[in-house]
Length: 424
Image 1 (cartoon, helix red, strand yellow):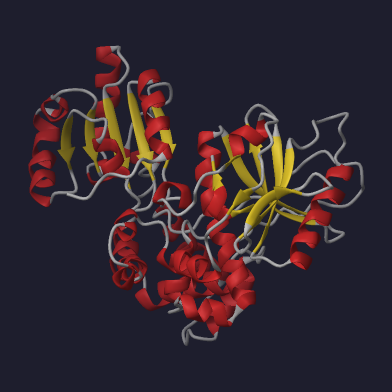
Image 2: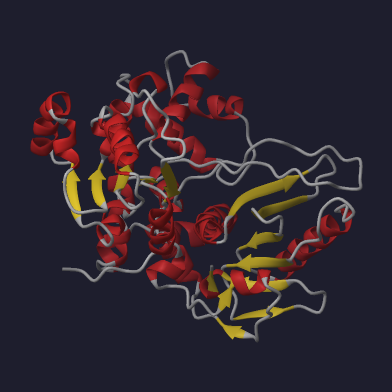
């Protein structure tokens, strides 16, 4: 049996379980939700097993409590396959009146409101899991801590061992847990298998609506071609029309996007809206992102060498990978990730904003001194525009890079941090 790699979600789950009767772990399939839940669960109801699901569907009408009996926390795996169990769990949480009763996992969003009677508010806590960050998978040495930087603890210069070849491979491999455990020559297959499963099977099952697999594949390709960019659905539609002989309107594109979001395949980055001194209008468009960069590279049939041969595209996919990692780290920091852009063209690739009001400005560059200087200049200009009478100044600013031998602090106070050194 392969050794379990510790996840940041392990710590979050332990905390959440202590505070609520039930915890729901959401996220894309194959990202490790069940394996993580099993580390803490003491009994399991596996609704992903067709025979167990069939029996459970009969019992849910006759004796729902029977399904919930077992040592606690009891894991209800792939609970959305039997939506009626949600209300049974909610009722049982009320009856028992104790925390740490149930852990639920699901690879698609909550069912429509009319499929459940109660929302679970006050009884359920929620965790979003994603594929592994580079620190979780073991590729980042973790010598630079975001937590320390938020606490005002600078770091000494640190070394980075990841090369451009490593970054290209890791972008295409993705953070799928199984892919991190198998030989490199077959690890890339995981992302291709994932995309195939999404477009040919999962998108048909997510809400019972029949959809065209080729159109779903076309949408993923369009997302990949526009990755890390704030483009509207109208642009995606035009891009898809080049390979879609039938009528395709914007509502259809929106429907496919909605379905794929329900599967946690895409996860766009919302705009940050700070208090600024300038009169520039803040752009509110989301930037387009996958939950893992390998989905984009696999959708376009790209491998590591293809990225190295096209550094501009590589830069966009690298940004997608950094967004994935920062989102994983943000969960541990009680924060969320955003992007910033205004009408003057001033932008910041990512802003990690915590619930306590502190935040960091983070630019993403594949590498190169000129690019790093550009990123630092953008952040310094944005920081100067922040109205610090109405909100605090940034806790720190950093350029997250892919290629570079060292993590260090520049003379202007901006950090340069290789993704291969970063952790939460």
